[in-house]
Length: 171
Image 1 (tube, rainbow, N blue to C red):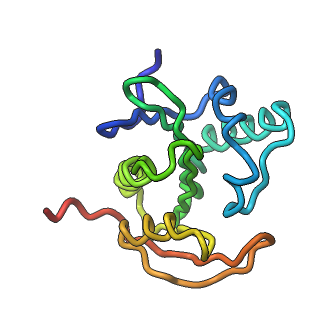
Image 2: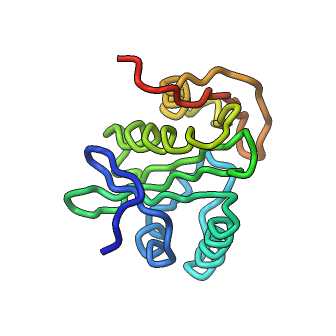
């Protein structure tokens, strides 16, 4: 088994590989994506094409896609993307499989990815989220995000947070 790229108390975070699609595909549903600008892949083949694009972005070092897995069971939990690594305004995107919602996985994993991504020369992070998506909005605010603007997406109104880079624990 490959070593995780990052770790949290309950999760191992791996860089995406094509083998992960077997676990990802059944978890991407229309209810999961109601607050996302994209729609679920209609077939495994379509998801493979998306996965290939992720690998190209990895190779070009423009994006990182982290696969979240439970430490004890290796259960697939979700994905976190860090986009636009070649800029000073990196963007976060994440989702957690529906049967793992409300267990703190997003906060735990995103905090670790946020700390990692802050080692890049970052002015601020962009975190776009649907106005109605209160759990994701709370996550942006937990990371120190403030509302910088609004945008109309095809499926919903979104709020765009700016999150300052991690400065170290203040506890």
